[in-house]
Length: 600
Image (cartoon, rainbow, N blue to C red; front, side, top):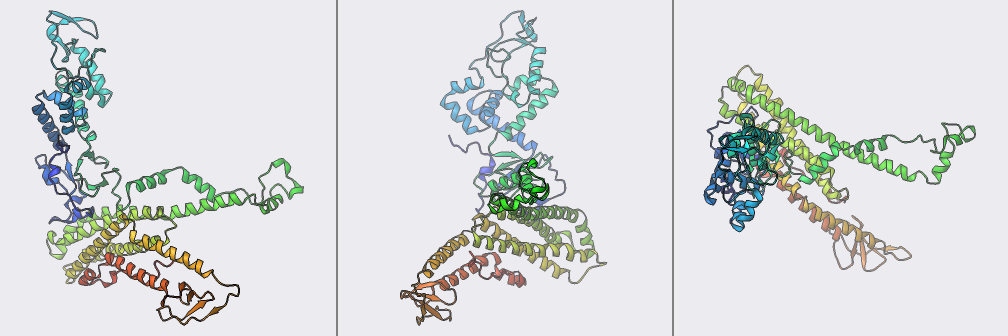
């Protein structure tokens, strides 16, 4: 059977490009960010599911979930020619996968029936006037007794108590079996609806609904507090970032807050580190230590002859012997580790706070200020959506910038060139975002406080829309670059390190006299050169690299020049100067930092 048979309408959606960026969903379309509505979003029950499709997921309300569940039950019941309650039991057993139900059923029907407790033929209760209840052992008329498909009779009161206890124990009631200890016949929803109380029937129905989402590999509940929407993921869509109708963005893979460009493993490590008790020990090691005048020996051995109880003269002697070198080294390492963690965590937390503030400002803009600005500037709200788009961009960029600090914390220390380039890109991103944030907040306030329409409002519109576009492009490229690990910078770093190593070895090959004589060659950059006593090498006066005599120009200088142009090409992807020039923002073009690859 087709393994995708159990996929719903989501399968028919087009897969998005691998470079899909999460916040573009909120930017496309005429409504300019309807998916990011921070006002309470109430869906009409009659609203079609397809109207809530996004590029990589479908948002489902409780009504939608029940509709899909009923459709799956009806489909299995029709294909296998079994009652609906039996189809429901089979689907729950197979994690609501229609294809798995079909595969297992047609492969070995008898084995499947035995596993779930579905008998091939229904056994009726004995045809007698009175029957004995298998729980309370009292005799009752046959018409007040009930049984599962196995025919074991029990009275109504015992059935209600048995069902109520099972439902109170939790979702295990969905696999309820006959009360007879020797029987494994399944008790389905058909008997629950007849024998259980209204309260228990509601609980059972709720467990069944939650099972459809929690046991389904394609669905998950939105992790936002108080949200009752479920999200069905479109497999193969490229991005795990999804946005619920409640405006909460989260990662489908780990259900944490959306965290591109950082992977789920790094996020898990970062969250664990933020709450781990080990940081307390690092603080103790870094900020406390034994008194430097004590030798840590027994108290009874100290007194006036050792310099006093609090001024031990044995410490200096023991320190000179190297007894405290290891403990001092450990304290220094702990202190450095704590300082590094504090640096990145403070900035991570600051951007998180700024994001929460930006979301509050966005909500205020949507509910209050936009109408006021529309009245003040005599423009319809439909022409002011560029302001909402700007605030949406600020909120999303704050999230990305926040997680770049977790990315930087786990970036290997030995990759100097990559770290330097990352910090440069991060700094430029922060500067660009602050520029956009200031324009959307402080410069907009001038028009909100105005007493009437202002003639330069259209200029402000052009500026804010341009800053939004440039910032979005920069952050999109930043995310893609970090997700690929800045691999171009990493390869050049390794090559530079290897060249420097060989240069050091070559420069060490001098003769005993250590004399230097002119070689008459140049490094190709206008700098004079000199040769070593070894006639096969000459040294560049500009970079001191030892070159083979057969070369007419310095190999290291040429390499650095090539890497300089490579960095320019990488940075150009972020800057997009042509786009900036069109918008009149030449100051947003990224400037290449000097010697970005030379200090590795």
